[in-house]
Structure formats: structure tokens, C-alpha cells
Picture 1 (cartoon, rainbow, N blue to C red):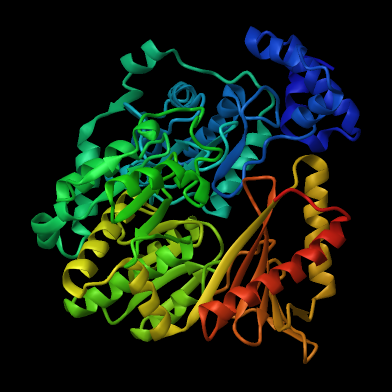
Picture 2 (picture 1 turned 90 degrees about the vertical axis):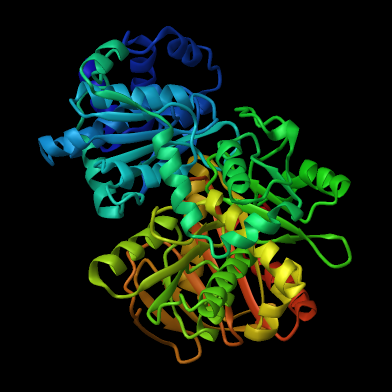
Length: 606
């Protein structure tokens, strides 16, 4: 088999019937073809374990709805500059089909602090340039929401962000955005995938940096986009005068967790009046090794260890943490007794929703057709808060891209006014200037909310959360993620989903399951009546997700991750008090996970 034929096999696994032969041919191609640099070939030649070679070549790193994410390394099932070039060529082909004007409008490219992020961003730009497509490259690392904003602000045809968000240091990723600033929807992603699969050879044209600049195909983005982005965030705030007058009284400890949030978050907070901000020094600078944390994830309480130490020493009021690409935000806030209360992603979303809706109503700025948008995996307390103020809640599939799609639809069809969107995984957006979650904006809004409640209502944020519970009902939420890596892991994840889909469990932890929503087949199964019906509006795209609803309210959701080798289980329970709910959650969780372990035949590491 010649090199070109082997290159084609690398892109479309269906061309080979025998897995071992395919792995062997792919490995031979990558170690012998001089297109690949010596470092790549040496890395592969040094591998001794046949299983490791198989893991790197048995498949291609999957390009999903919004892009791809994978372990950094050589091979087709890893992320490296050659895979980045291949994906970029697929994107370029879809842009070329849209005509010369689309190529002229170009693509914005951003990157975070991870290993090889700057290199992958440059590779993306130079492949686009080789195809005659203008590339707008940020001059330094930037947060994901600014990339979303920049697509809209510059009027480009697309955007690319090199990031693996909150994943471990071994990972990086490639996210694609459409011209509205949102992550590409399934139909557009499928076109890119088709173009990727149609490539015959891996030898992708790459323009030199010098020629790309000389031909005006590579342009550097400076501070003008920063200033416009910051202005939009400031416009979303409700009490700028209060922040300017008294913001210095609120003591904030902030950590960017070695990522892209340091400059924008500190700049925004300072500009609007929060001048008493202490940044965790050990985590202030970009660090691709994320050397002070196991995971650079504000969802993980362990990531706050250093911030809590400094917050105690400095008697801070709130602690803010952003992930490496600054689209997720974590929060701790001091309670009346001086202790720090940790907020889940759901609770942060609910507090921001309550603050924005209640205060906009108070200020006479709440539209009658206002809408809250959240994901189906997020707490039902969000629905209850919106209902309390007479607003509609739209529930979408997991992924902020679906929230972005709802914003676009509201604008185009004039079907409502977007107020706020959130997902349980610490993602939030107020306003329509971007189409992705924004931890920079959320930092400013939370600081303002904490100041407002302290100065105007003499309340801490934990007290505000308790007020919401009393008004709208007590809810408790938790997520459990189980890692199941490699080919065997995928098979086990499918086994879990198949079992739940076929078995349709009737109860967990003493709670009766009323129904099961199958988002792939778009059907709802009613356990007691033994009936099924088509899922109602809004009709969501098919996705391999199951939601078991309890008679008492709340749910359990099972969802394989689209970007990580994990399956996630979401628990949301409703009750009369937080004390009783904690006990119920423990029982439901234990009962459900025991079923999952029995299906697997072992107890995996969570």
C-alpha cells in the first residue's frame, strides 16, 4: 500500500476491515513518511507497548458537535499539529464552498495557556492562509468568551479556539465557532467532518509565516477587541454607581488557575470599582503544567485550596476562580458566621438568575417576554425561580452551544428576550454580545451581586441562596463522573446506556421513577402506565441521553461525555429541607451507582 493510500486509511477507518492491520499500517505510515517531523517519528518509534500503539491508531480523534479534545501526542487518536492541520483543512474546505466573500471575512483564532496551544493556533492560521482564507490571530492568550465575541465584532465567517477548557494538563482541544459566535451546530459540524474524511492525504499545505503576513492573510488582533469586549460586559451590569462608590469595600480573592482569566477578570473588576482584589500569586501566571492543582477546574473544591488559605488570612468576602480558558467560574462566599460556603455550578446559576431577574424587575427593565435558558442537566430550581417571576424557562441539551442557538432564534424570530443562560458545569451568560459562557462577565456580576446584597439588604450570598429556597423550594444537585478510557471504555459506556434504556428502572433510594426521557429516540416512557409517547416541544436534536424523572420531582440523568472518556450522572432532587434532602441524595446515589457497578462488573475510579 503506498503512502497516499495509507493516508486515506488514516482518515476513514471504514476503509480497512481488520483493526490490527489498520493499526500496523497507520503506525508504519507515521514513522516512515518524511512529512512528519523527526520528533513525532521518534516519539512513536520509542513506544514499546503494543496496546499503547493500538490506542493511538485504532481510530481518529473524534470531531464532535463543537470540535475535538484529546491527549497531546503523536498518532491519529491524539491531538498534535498534524491532526490540527487536517481538521483545519476540513474547516477551510467548508469556507471555500461559501465563496470568496467568506474567505475574505476570515476566521478568528484564540488560544489558552495549555501545552502547544500557541503552536496549534499558528498552525491553524497558516493552513487557512494556504487556502486563501484570512486568519485573525490574537496576540496573546484570551478567554473563550472573547473569541465568541470577536467573531461577531469582526464579522468573520468562523472562529477557532485552541483549548481543552478544564481538562487535565495532558489534554488540548480545537473548538470551532460559526459566524454568529456560537459553537458550530450539528449540521455544520457534520459538513466539516465530511470534508475531513474526504481528504486523501495527510500532506496539508501550510503557508510560511512570512508569506502569510505579506499577502495580508495573517492579521494580529490587538487591544481594540479587548476594549469593545469589556464595554459589553460593563453594559450588562445593573448597579455601576454602587460599585464605583463602594466596590472597594468588598474584599475578593481571585485565582485564574494558571489560565487566561488573569488579565481580563482583574481589569474588569478594577474598572468597575472593585479595587480590593487579591490574586493568588502561585496561580497568577500562565502555566501549562497547572503545577499547583490536580485539575484546573473550578468545579473541583481542591482547586480552591490556596485561594481559601489567602481568603482566610485576608478576611475576604468572596473567592472567585476561573478555568484555563475563563469560560467557567467557581465561587466561595463568606457566611454570617465567618465560614466560607462553597456554591455548586447550579447554585451560582440560580443566584445569578435570581439577582438579574429580581433586580431588573425592580428597575423596570424586565421584559414581559423574558426567558431563562438552561440545560436539561441543570437544576429544576432554575425553572422554579423563573416561574416565580412569571418568566418562561427553555431547557436545551447539554452544551452551551444550544443556549447560543436559542439566543439566535429569539433574535431572528422575535420569540422572546434572552435574560440569562446557565449550565450546571459552571457556565453563565447574561446578554447577547457573545454566544458562549463567560466567566469574565460572571465574575463582575457576582461581585456586584455580593456588594448589592451586603450594602442594600444586609445579606451574604449564602443567605440569598436560603431566601431562594424558601421562595421556590429546596433542591439539591450533584454530578458523578466515571472515567472509562479507551476502546474498552467506550464499550462499557454503551453497556450502561443500553441497560438503562432496556431495563427502565422503577425506583432508586426509595423514590419512585415516574418516567424516562430518551433524548436519542425522542420518546418518553411512563413506567406505571407502561406507555410511551413522542417527546414534546421544544424538539431537541437526538442525543444519547437518558433522564429518569421522579414522582416527587427531580431526576437522574445519564449522559456519555462528547469530549472526554467519561459518563456523567446528574442528580437533582426536590424536598422540604436541605437536611432531609442530603440523606435522600445519599440513598438515591448509592442505590443507582450500585446498579451501574453491577452492569460493569467492577467499581471504576470516579
